[in-house]
Image (cartoon, rainbow, N blue to C red):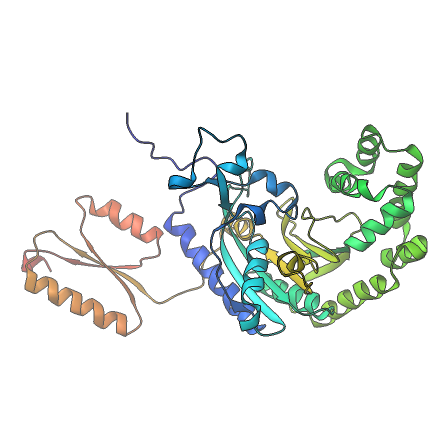
Length: 420
């Protein structure tokens, strides 16, 4: 039986045309974030299964690619539970690995610590447009900064990057988990039911307020609680300042500093931004990860129907590893969706050094080959990008393929010197 030449479902081969764009975008990301003082780090793609299933990753914990124990430790025949055969898994995001990394190396790191991490993550999800089972994530995080300066810097760094990539008129939607909890408590929902309420609220964009009402009632919540909850959103739709409206409506259910904190972030970002975007307060913004403790935010780009990145504050997560809480906040760009949008819009990587292909006919003598390679080296020193390859029988097709990769000049070398 012939081996399969297709990638595993939900994963893809990346062709040179896309790879050029990916490399360029990675360069812009690293350069921009570097200017904001973020330092590159790297963590293993495999994490301890206990870390990955610690009830911090929301629904993503149901999508983990789990790894069996190896060698003598694997005893499938006698195992009666999954825990006896699984000890690790592929990371589903970069935040859990970052927190483990920080907990393990905090004594060697500055405070606050501004981390940039890029790498593949894996989720056993249903593939669809802009969503894969293996995909690149790009995170920036600030650990050890308790003030809103962390949120402001993260939003400015991320939006500056998007602006440099040509994105315009997008939104940064912002909310606070403490507002979500205050709204649920004010409406009479039990604290144990908050997550269930938020899961339904998170569907607001797709099912609207009537759909949220129906699902909450179908889930068995009291009609009085549901009506009081929905009344808050109806009031928001009429209010000019949504944050001020909720602060007044919720009263003692909402901590006073939450209102001032969100307003400070929005005002500061609007005053300092360099990209063309809008800050929007969105009381229905939930974010799926249960590790968020405060501010949460999300990127909304008009060309794409869903989120193109997001993040928030997770002040309690380090404490689960060390016993001592450390303030932490992060922002992740939806790298794969950004690449998809750039390619769909015909994005061209800005002009790079001249790309020249040396095509060498099979049979060229060794001395001549050495001269050709020396010539290529000299051209590279002068700033050109030179590809040295053997000439194919179908030279026309070979050139067409190289032109797609950006090669604009071809130099041909034949074994018969008269042809050169």
